[in-house]
Image 1 (tube, rainbow, N blue to C red):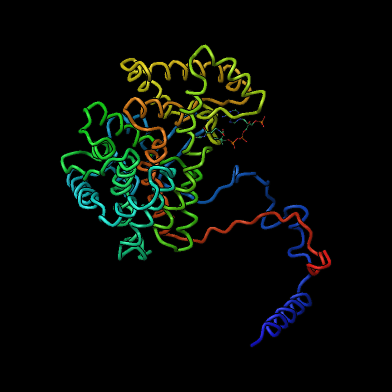
Image 2 (image 1 turned 90 degrees about the vertical axis):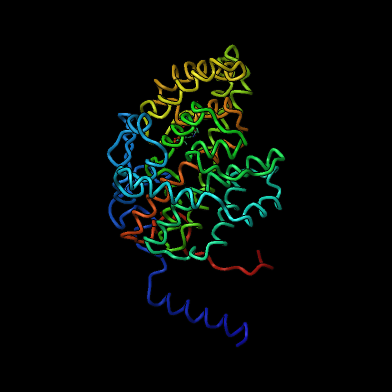
Length: 416
Ligand SMILES: CC(C)(COP(=O)(O)OP(=O)(O)OC[C@H]1O[C@@H](n2cnc3c(N)ncnc32)[C@H](O)[C@@H]1OP(=O)(O)O)[C@@H](O)C(=O)NCCC(=O)NCCS
């Protein structure tokens, strides 16, 4: 068959289509939204409902965050990240033997194949953004897993547990390689949070540091249909595979409007330089319509409950550390200044990312690693929601309102 014949076929098909259909793709759709129902266009899918869920609930007016019926304050106080993962994945708090079984699986999966670390050592891990490296690491893990293409609920559940375990290991390795250090193997005696800190720093964390990281991981685990969760679910809904879905989630979380805000907050606080500069810095930010990182939320129009916990934790740590003390006092002054104006005008308050960075910084963690910490936690929400949706899967496929022309004549390139 020649190229001309292919073009002829296309022309015939186009002619046939034109005879059978009106040239306007769908009457009504280009003017006023009448299909499938009267709808209001919400930019950024604001107000759109994608599915029902039993996993978690964010009540933005009341400032509630609930996982499977349990509020985040109770979970942060009483639970552990491992138990919270079980709760998100299986819908109930585990009993002792169920939790022991789950911990055994995490322990077995936590060590990653050496080939993964070899890849991290062969790319510019120290120079790239760690979230981009994290996506590469998950891709390598998928390539090394002979079960990666199993898209059954059972198969993907197992991959979810593997990834919950391994995300911390690869993020720890990335942190080490960025510092020019060798990755360290997980320590079977430590909890997930303890191991994560150990694999990043090479030192067994204090009980306080381990507890604070555990609380941070619990609080970041799930948060409604946020961008990265939705992204993960969209990819999984095509029956791609869990690794590919999670890689997409990592890409989405990286952005400064989403998980990347925790890193951006620190840069802002350093740029401000101290509490005395806050007023003038904020005036300039307002003037140039610059957003203040770590403030505002699509859903919360009340104080983010996670920031209610992380703020005081940051204060506690800052009292013991001079450099963090300065960051913390700058943050407090910024919160006061911003909420005095935007809290009243637009119900804009600090979000989860505002105080978390100060906590991580005080623990000696490099700023660029803040968003990977978020991913180490959110992998649980991503996978739990992708799995819940998979049980009654339907391909995500929304529509856009086409507002362009429909009857342009094709002009050959030499006549344009
Ligand atoms: C999170 C975020 C993207 C949600 O925003 P959204 O629902 O899309 O809201 P919009 O960006 O449309 O903002 C609505 C209004 O509030 C303002 N606003 C929102 N967040 C703001 C912020 N952090 N600083 C200053 N103004 C902000 C916008 O400028 C806009 O004002 P306008 O109506 O006068 O144009 C937004 O608040 C933001 O960019 N925050 C900073 C990044 C951040 O912390 N992200 C982490 C979220 S957990």
